Length: 20
Image (cartoon, rainbow, N blue to C red; front, side):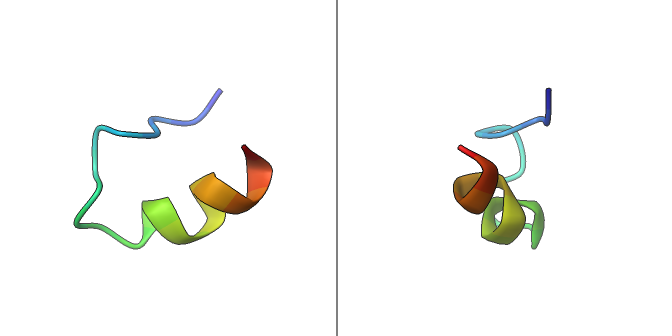
């Protein structure tokens, strides 16, 4: 659903790992 892995250096990984 989220671009996880695409923006590892971005803050996205913070909530991305929580959802995944």
